[in-house]
Length: 453
Ligand SMILES: C[S@@+](CC[C@H](N)C(=O)[O-])C[C@H]1O[C@@H](n2cnc3c(N)ncnc32)[C@H](O)[C@@H]1O
Image 1 (cartoon, protein in one colour):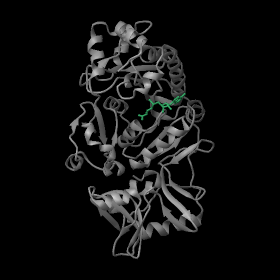
Image 2 (cartoon, rainbow, N blue to C red):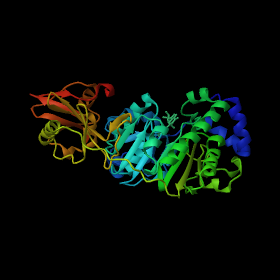
Image 3 (cartoon, rainbow, N blue to C red):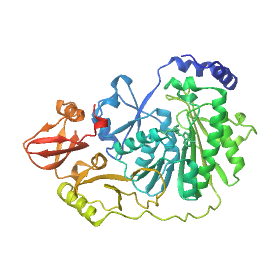
C-alpha cells in the first residue's frame, strides 16, 4: 500500500519506536466486523442461526469478527436486518455514549448509520433519536439502514448542524459527533481516503470539527453527555480538537473512558498545552487491537442550559386516512399502532415518542413509515414489515434462507401458493423480509425495486 510520504514522516515522528509495529499493520489483512440486531434477535438465537465463523469483538457485546470470504452482506439475513456490517473499532463509539431507553439522543453526523443503528438498538426503540446527515445522497443510505434495522424512534433529517442548533438548544440528553475527518485510520479499509489526504485537508477537517462541536454544545442540556469520535490519527483532529473545546467552554468536564481490551489513552504530549487529563480519552490503534484507527472522547456539560421551548409534533392525519389505515390494520395485523400518526401527503408515519415539531426541517423519515394511501386503499411500506415480528401479522409465508423461493422473492418475482389472503408478510427462517399480496394463489412481490438482487 502506497501511503502519503508526509503522513509516513508525521507518524514516524509521533510514534517513534512504536512506528514500525504501526506500519507493519498495513501489510496485514483488515479485520471485518458485524453487529447483530438485538431489536430483532437475541445473542444465542443469532449465534445458532448465523452460518458464519464468528468471534466476539471484546469491546462491543453485540459485535463479532467474521471471515471476509463468507460475505454476510449478501445473505438474506442481512436484508432482514439481523445484523449490520461495521468496522470493529467503530463499534466502540456508541458503547461509549451508552444511550438508554426513553432518552433524547442526537447523532449529528450519522450516515451511513453504523452508529445510529447501534444507538437505536441500545435505546430499544424507545425515546427520541434524531439522526442527521448533511449530505443529501448519504442521507438516503442512512434512512435505508434505519429501515432495515427496524428502527421506529428516529427522525431522519438532512440539515446543517447550525440549523439544528437554532431549533434544539438545550434539548438533548446525549449527543454523538462522529465527525467528518481526514480518515487516516481507514487507509486499509478504503484506499480512496489515501488520495484525499494532505496536511491541508487535516487542517480543514480540524476547523470543521470545532465548528460542529460548537453546534453540538448548544444542543446539550445540563448534565448532558457528548461523545466525539474520528477515524483518524492526527492529533490536530483528536487531542487538539478536544483541548480547544475544553478551553472554549468552562462548563465541560472530560469523562474517563475505561480502557478495556488493549484500547489506549489519548496522548497529553500531543496537545498544545500538554493537558494531562487528555489521558481520559481513548485511542484504538491497529497495532494494539483487531480493528482500524479511532479516537473517542466523552464530555459532560455541567452548567445550566436554556430550557428547550419548542413544541411537540402533533397528529395531522385526516379522519378518512386514519380510517383507511385502521381498516388495513384490522385485516392484516394482530397488533395496533398506538403512536401519533402523521401524514406527509398520502404517506403515513407513526412518530417516535415525544417527537418535537419538525416544521421547516428537511425530514427524510419520521419514525415508522407505515405506508401510503392509494385511492383509499392502504398499501403497507417495506419499513412496516421490517419493524414487525411474524407474530404481529395474521398471515405470513416463510421461506428458507437457502431456498430458490427466497432468491426468487429477493429478485422481485411472484410466488405461487394455494391461498387468497391479501397482504401477507414474507419471512426468511421466521424473520420478516418484506410484503407480498396474495390473490388467487399468486403472491405479487412488494420487495422494493431498489433492494432487489
Ligand atoms: C465519519 S462519517 C459518519 C459515519 C457514521 N456516523 C456511521 O457510523 O456510519 C462523518 C459524516 O459527517 C458528514 N459531514 C460532512 N461535513 C459535515 C458538516 N459540515 N457538518 C456535519 N456533518 C458533516 C459526512 O457527510 C459524513 O457522513
